[in-house]
Image (tube, rainbow, N blue to C red; front, side, top):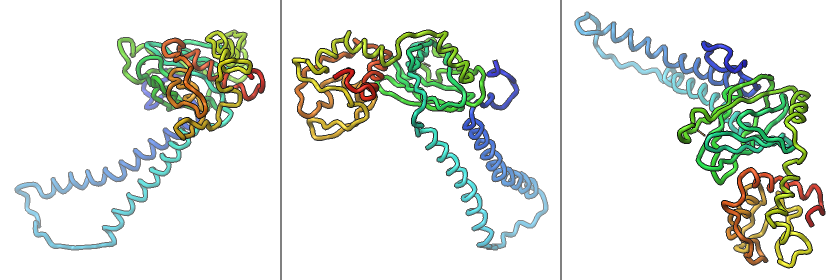
Amino acid sequence: MNGAANPLAIWPPAASASAVEADHLILAFTVLTLLLTVPIFIGITYFAFRYRQGVKANRQHTETRNSAVEMTWMIGPFVLTLFFFFWGARMYVEHKTLPAGALQIDTIGRQWMWKFQHPGGQSEINDLHVPVGQNVVLHMISQDVIHSLYVPALRIQMEVLPDRYTDLWFKADKPGTYHLFCSEYCGTDHSVMGGSINIMDAGDYQKWLGRAGSNVTAAAAGEALFSSYGCSGCHQGQSTVRAPSLVGLYGRPVPLADGRTIVADDSYVRDKILNPNDNLVAGYKQVMPSFKGVIAEDDLLRLVAYIKAMDLRTGSAQ
Ligand code: CUA
């Protein structure tokens, strides 16, 4: 495992370009901090020694003023540190902006394991397999308490929260096996809530997907749930109960009864399944039962995947 290569190394190995850049930023900022503080400490030490009690020295205070020098020591470090502020801010924005067309892996944290679901329907516990050189989004939610997914080799970390989706993305460029951890104290077995991330060549990843085996994609599994939970009974064309069709819903703005408009994203769809009374859609009466405590997070993610796919397969649910 190259994740545990050298116990004396300052940093764990870096498996992505942004991990390398994060190291450069921290290293450069550390060097700058040393350049700005070491001379001051040398000065303090020298003067403390030079003017210590009992030593003959000229202790007369003659006032001298040099604005140019004062401006230099104020503006110089300010501009230098500002440079690092913008460098860090740029990386932060990059980290927070999800790339379009990325491979989405649904991630569920729970006491005390990680569950990963690939779009093809393959799922795995604690060991995550991802392809190298491709943008990967981990779409995460917790089934119980707050967890946090941390992959040191990629220099990424994100809280995993109950009732709310959070996303984390990366593009690994060094194949290998690295550690992943839960970095938020979450109960008795927090310390063993971890696993590994296997970064593989595209071909190996395809082979792994084949071996991991799944004959239903996440969206197809969602479609089966859609009828088994009775959703299709109301949300499909021939229904006697008047409920909105969900075809083409995903990603579109939805007008609400109270006049607001809300975009139908993953969180909206999930919330409507669990709390149908919230955010009532304009023109419809509230008749849908709540599925809170009935549908588990992994099935909710499959239902979202199905509803997301509906507009791509127009008519399939009409
Ligand atoms: Cu989950 Cu700590």
